[in-house]
Image (spheres, one colour):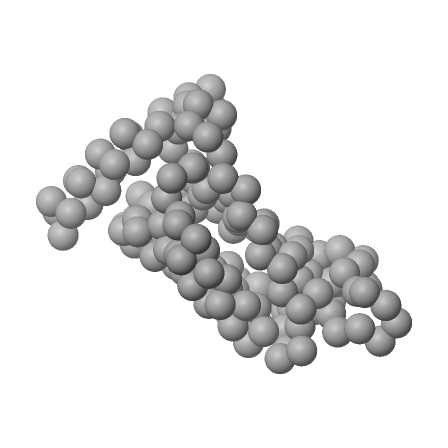
Length: 143
């Protein structure tokens, strides 16, 4: 069964985060994304939410000499979970989390690439909204 979603990729300048800070940021962002998508914070959904933190060469995301560091956060969820209002709230929350980890002057870009149903497969199985809804219902029954 292919139900690994959402995927979050955070790209930071090299040397910006310690390993511990990267781990905290990964967890905070994962929790924020699950809340924004209105998915329960269960063991299943925690394991299905993948957050990568990658380092890029120093200065990779500047707009010029002396510009503050930049962090790129790319969120790839299945289509239909996020509204513009949820995206805006998530942007504010993720920006706060990234700045807490990297510094108050960090420029934070959040890009959301929604994937239409039928275009996301994991281990050969398509991720389907109906299956995700079944897991949400099961979590509600056992809560």
